[in-house]
Amino acid sequence: MTTDGLVARGQHKLHLDEKVEWIWEGNADKPQHGLHRYQHIQLVRDGQMRHFVAEIGPVSDHPGWYPLTFWAAGEYSVGEVLEIVERMRKGKPSENDEPIDLALSYLNLLEEKQKRKAHISEFGPYLKHMR
Image (tube, rainbow, N blue to C red; front, side):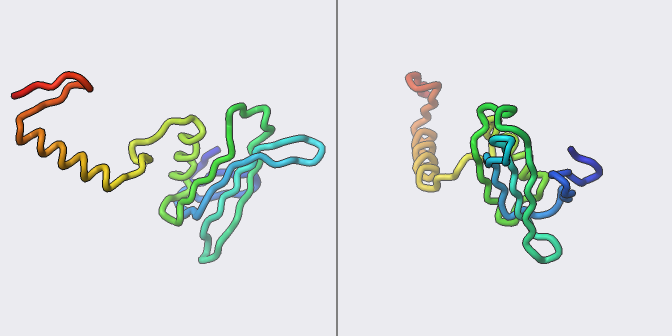
């Protein structure tokens, strides 16, 4: 639930531009109600670490959701982190979520330069064309 730059998490109101340290979603037992899904958010507010917990609902209402953790380290705001977590739940990676492998990227760059020098274009795994 979002209103005017605020997001309601349980009884708490979080500003969408506050910087988040981490967010964790997981299942925990709610006495006499069974397993419920909870969202824990830790952020910096007024120069101090604050911890917020919100109940999302019974586990049975959210089939296929697994516990997840996202370490933001103060780099992302509440709004950005909630969007990332939503994508993680749905299994839709973002173009920015892909990890960077510098060694492999460097080798790919060298291979691409060699192909340009040899005037070779590649179309799929089996078709190469000499320009």
